[in-house]
Image (cartoon, rainbow, N blue to C red; front, top):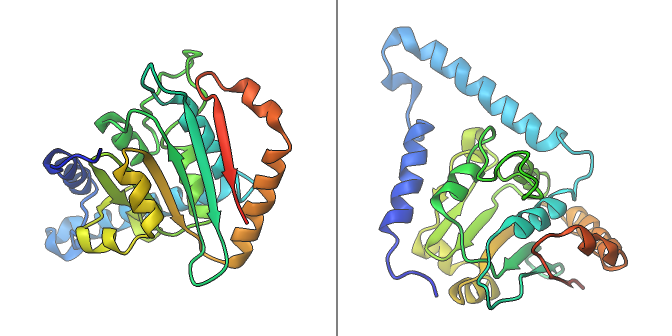
Length: 234
């Protein structure tokens, strides 16, 4: 179940925000530092944006990244590691979300997601499938405000400025505006990645990829922990 207290999680998010100088205006700095700080921020923003959009040719590569991360997650010994992937298209809202029955994100995981040079996975150990932080940025190809919900963690990112690296806490009012099905699975203790999609064309591309995945069950052979992948689309 979702934790009744979120002081720890909020504190971590606030710590990451401070490390990114979130909310700091260049004009608050001494004059001799203003231009340098502004240029550094612009360069880092441009680098992250290019990474998110140019690292992978396919717009829907993010789905493979989500599956790889699910495969690297940790699970209770009495559970069957699985992930459900949903596409909701048509009507007033177009969105995608994944639901994973892992144990839940750790602070180390969260800090890795909020970075581009750090991973919570041991490199070259042969015990991981993907890399948190780097590949995960590919979600910005289809979404400008991805949400991450896992036990007491409730945060989102923005495609503006350093928003791709800087989490923002999802306050109660914003949380209440999320689709009911998202809040329901999160409240049940699942880890949820929620992506409000940018366009109908994006939704069509995701549906096409999901149909391809449905016909290619061989990919399950390459997973180490994940045992079930359930696809839900129109």
